[in-house]
Length: 96
Image (tube, rainbow, N blue to C red):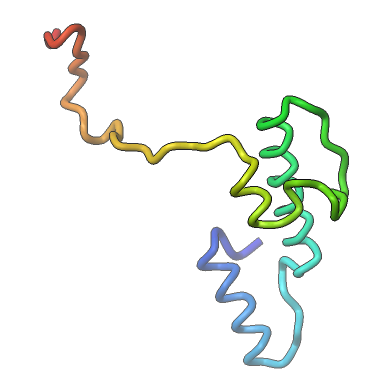
């Protein structure tokens, strides 16, 4: 696969449009299946239940609004490992 990441996927779609081939590496159907799998993971993690695919339209997680209303909340990361000093570990306010 000559493309990596979103940049490559976008380039691939634009190239297919420009040359009129309509041939893309990842189709809309494959993209939908990927999003559905991710949504099922959120649903299972939030409810603790087994989720079967394809998702049913009556699933509370079927829509974006449903995911936002029902998914366990994840909080914004405030620190990154890159911000820590070289191998410094802080315990009770002391470094060592």
